[in-house]
Image (cartoon, rainbow, N blue to C red; front, side, top):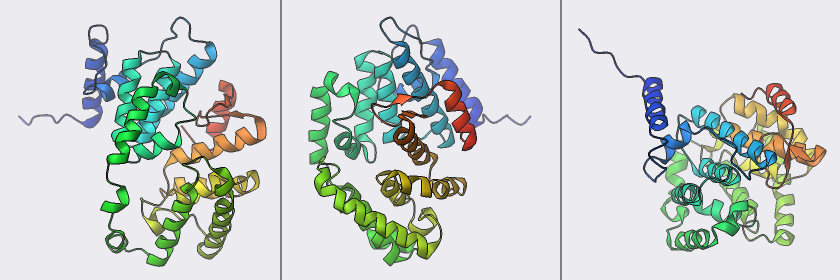
Length: 294
């Protein structure tokens, strides 16, 4: 008799079931953190406002959906979202600090630590750990020192001139933004917007995975995200189409929608913008449906 194979969904169900079974007796730790999160269902603790609970619950739900679409591969953005959610939901400090540590160890985690230091609400309650993680990042080799640009272009059969241009745009997008020096960053943003407009006119499509590979697929989005409302709205359908055609992941698209709604209405839909109120659940559902986001 042929043995039945354990499929991924059943295996995942097993992990969630086991995690749920020991939720009372066992806590979160570094090794079980991911399975614990996937099994986690927020409950409103004493002292947690309705606003914070709704915010945390929404981030948990959206992060789980994103992880499902990414084959449950946790990345720096996921860990940042999880840390933010667990903090808002008033979970134990030692629990959300595990997520913070895992973010620092992920690809681009050090960039996230530096970029969001002044924005994240949990920094004040984890200052010592947060600063030590940033300090340790400084001792790590830079990604570019290990990255073979020519090999990347050749292996992916890309246009080296276009990829070089996008690479430079991406570097300029972060040059002073990481340092929070927007006076110096603003001229670079304007220059980048002009370049992106020009590249779009030439290529007549989003500059995504097919043209620049998955390392640089979010550069065009970043320039749009850091532009003005007119440019964001103009390129919103272009970014949506890029997501539909798998040229860009869905998370940046949701962030662009949030930024547009923040500018226009003073509230957001998916919770990616720090310090901006969420729309009510009815509006969230309507906007998600409008843009085909589950």
